Structure formats: structure tokens, C-alpha cells
Length: 226
Image 1 (cartoon, rainbow, N blue to C red):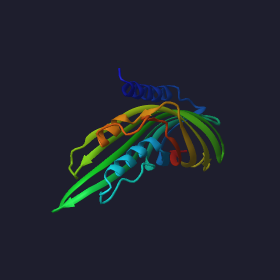
Image 2: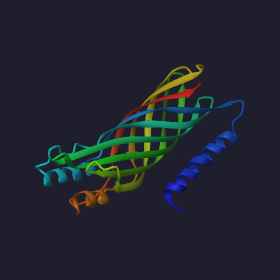
Image 3: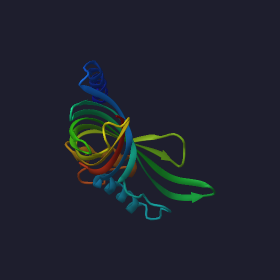
């Protein structure tokens, strides 16, 4: 059984358990929201920089992976001031290089970064303030569109684990819709190996060590039923 499939089964099992054990002294809530993140992706950006250095005549070189945004969906189980959460976050970050344009024919590479996180966490909430953390399973997926074609080539697919810590600023839990604003930091626990990205993009390895642990900072805006 592969790791991704196992993680999804754990996520679904967690949701079923919460539904089974819901009682009068607790509340099961559904949440959705927006995630804005900045990732310190030094290793991936070194690979992009090496590509730019080898293609100095490019019309528009690669920028850097870093700022991403996306959506969050989850469930939350509350008992008094303790909350247990399971969330799914899906973020986007695309980077493109245009090498040449001749007779309306564009020679380009567009990297489509898609980043999924399955998180399981706990927090303490005291009216308007909360703090908490989670353990995360992350899927990094980068595909490439070549020369503006519709087809995509897989350049990288890697999994890793991380831990996230946050502070929350919340509206009253007595409202029908509650709002939580959460600045957070995500600390990687295991590596991401960018070697496939390097080989697919540069045709050989251009970095001495292709493994990295990108640190992430961000802000989440979460809505949930009160």
C-alpha cells in the first residue's frame, strides 16, 4: 500500500471516528478557508537559477518558487476549550520561462507547482485567542507544460512530513459562522529530493545535494460553523 493511499485512509477514518463520538458536550464543525504561504525553497530555486544561467538568451527567465496560495477544507471536533482538527490544504505556485518566440511559435516551459497537505492537529481556544499545532503529510507535485501545449509532463513528485505551529485570533464561538485568522510556521521533519526536477529541467544534476527541507511561513483565514 503506497503512502499517499494510506494517509488518505487515515484521514477518512479520523473523520468517521469524529462522527461516531460526537455527543452533547462536544461539537463537530466543518471548516473552509484560504491559505497564503511563503516557502523558503532554496534547493528548488537553485535548480531554476542553474537553468537560467545556462539559458542567458531567454526572453523571460524563471522567477523563484516562494509565494503560493490555495484552499483549505477540514473538520474540527470541540470539547470545551480543546479542539481536534483534520485539514486538507491545496496550494498553487506556477513559474515560467520563455526561451524564444519565432513566427508566433513560443519555446517555453511552464512549471505547475501543486502542493497538498493532510494535517492532524490539536489546539486550545480561549474565546478570541487560540494556539495549536499539527503533524502534516505533504505531497509536492510539479508538472511542466512545454511550448504552451495542453499536455503536461511530470517533473517531480515527492512526499515529506512537517510540523505546523500557529496562533489564532477568533470571533465568538456563539456566532453561527466563526472566523479564525492564523499566522503559522511549518517546520519540515523530512527531506524533499529535487533530483528529478533537476534532471528533467537541466538534463543532468546541477546541484551537489538535491535534498532540501523548505521552511514555510503563512497566514490562514478559516471559516467554520459556530
